[in-house]
Every structure is written in C-alpha cells, then in structure tokens.
Length: 287
Image 1 (cartoon, helix red, strand yellow):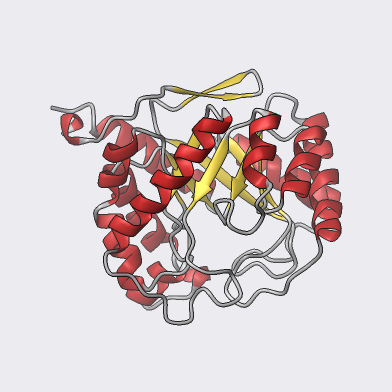
Image 2: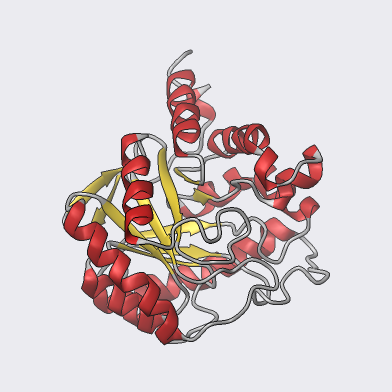
C-alpha cells in the first residue's frame, strides 16, 4: 500500500548542518524538565536524571530529543520567560556537550527562550502556539535559520479545552497552516514541520477527525508532519485508561498517524514508538 501514502516534497531537514533523513518515519523523544507535565512531570529535575533520560532516548533509537521547560497541559500554571529559559538553556548546554551529534529540539512559544536555546546549541524550535502567543517568533526563527515545528492550537493552554468549536476541523486547520506557512516562507524559513495539535483546543471527536483525515494536510502542503498523540486524553477517553495505562492505545494511534502521512512521532515511550515506526516502514514496502 506504499503508493497510497501521501508523499512529502522534502527528504531531509537541515538541523544546523546535521541532515535528518525524513524519507522514513522518525521518533522525537520527550524530555520534560517541568514539575507539572501531565505524564512525566518532576521526573527529570536533576542533571543526572536529564542525562539518563537523554541517553535512553538515543539508545532506544530516538532521532530527536525534545526539551520542554513549560507545561502546556490544560490549566497549567504560567511561569515567566526568565524561569523557562533558566530551566531550558542549561539542559541544552549540558546535552550539547555530552551528546554533540544529537538533534535537540526546544518546545517553547516564546521567541526570547527560542533565541537563547538556539544560541546554547538547540537545533529545532517546536512552537505549540504556531506564533500566536509571541508575534516575534516567526521573525526570530527566520533569523536563527533553524527548522520550525508549526503547531495548530485553538485558544491558549489555560482555557483551550473549554468547549472548543469548529465547523470543519480539518478545513480550519488547513486554513491556519496556509496563512502561517505563507508568512514563514516569505520570511525565509526553509524547514517547516506541521503539527495538527492533537489535544490543543480540540474535543476527542475533533482529534480523531483530524487523525482520520490527516493525509489531506500532507497532500495539501507537501511538508513533513509531526503527530503528538502520546498518552494523551484523546487516547485515554476512548480506551478508558489514564496516562500511565495508555501505551497500547498510544501505539495504535501512532500507527494510524503513520499510515495517514506522519513523518515524526513525538513520544514518551521511545523504544515502543521506534518499533512501531520500523514495522510501518517495512509494511509499506510490501506490495
């Protein structure tokens, strides 16, 4: 069924001179250095814990380490840009020193944090707000010349799950991406990765409608797409589990995302997600 999978135009992402081959599915391992993330908050509060997690991501086959210093779960407490940078920048420096060839992503919606992180050695900026929460983000990413993960969100994290509304969620996400990719390209951003924003201002029905029709986004833009479904409520509410019991549901949703054009899986469970990606890669070669 390989002929049915939507094709993307780019085969590589240029991560400050390191080329990430995206002709096959890749896995981004999550490293949350926050005390209040929905699944792994507080686990990586020391340098030793951070190094162990990063080493595990790489040993288990992860291609990118995504560092987050600010929880964006619904209702999460706000912190200042200075506090966020104070969490993120030392971790980027530590990982860049210990794992010089690793591809490091920073999950932030603040241009100030993005700039400090890239100057410290980060390769990719992963913005959950798609530039909506900091008008300087697009210009900053263009100037820094790093890949940018453009995520769709409706609202802001504190209130985004309070009755989100769409006439047609897929069409509206496509309109959002159309306007923002045009702006990014005009600014000179060369490597754009799309993220439909599963769980960010969407009901379970919205999420699964996006997942089912995700290939339309890939076909419309020809850009690599990141799927972040790992242990989220869209899985838990269908399976009747909590985050800690949702690995099987996560892998099932991840396989659907891969079938429908995802290039990157953002995952808590790297080893399992890498196995899923390898299995899918083999499956799509079979006629």
